[in-house]
Image (cartoon, rainbow, N blue to C red):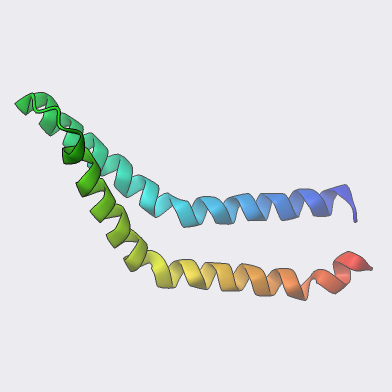
Length: 89
């Protein structure tokens, strides 16, 4: 196994992890920013006010992005398994 192969495998795995996590992180960031502005304007500092909408938003994003996420994971896994013989040899 060459160093370049290990670097490529790690790079592809990290890129895949970022692609899978990005939609949910962006939604959580956006909702958190909006809720923080509302809390600052109204001076309501209730913890559940920020937690529940983010939880619902991230869960909805997860369900909406699930087919795309599974498609990415299946494509990555099949490509990895197809390249196993060339990696070993």
